[in-house]
Amino acid sequence: MTELRIGAAVAARIEESYAPNFNARKFFPDWDPAVEQEHGAWLAPGHYDPASGFLKLSVHSWLLTLGGKRILIDTCVGNHKARAARPQWNSFACADAANARLSRRRALEHCAGGGALLLPAHFGAPFACRIDSRGDRFEPRFVG
Image 1: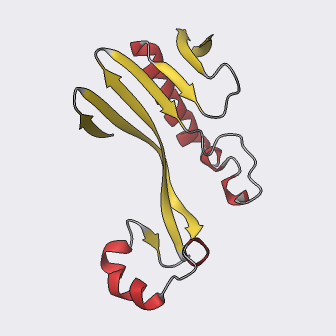
Image 2: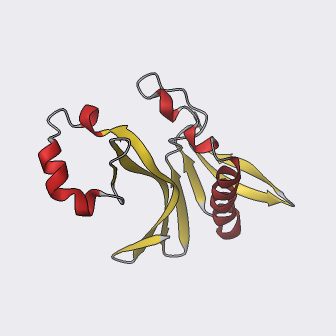
């Protein structure tokens, strides 16, 4: 987990996925194979997959901590959403079921264990909740 310190606050990145998801030539219409060749040593394999021609994208949440308070901002990019413009993203985070369960459980444990406020991007109003642990289950408690 990557952590950034911003004054007294700590922002911790909780990665869900880091995979080649964007066709580089479509994402950057002026993509130049000569530039790819010149910079290939640092582009691949960390940021670009030469075999597919796709750029890698990090899908992650942020856990903010300040003064004993915690907020988990979950972008929910790959969770249960249909995307006409990017059909390869339709529930892509669910493709690896074991990793999906593990990453979601970790996020819920962070919230339940420390009383963090969860801001999930794919929920409608109300937009924030606290997570209560009930044995091996978790339940949202929405706040107005």
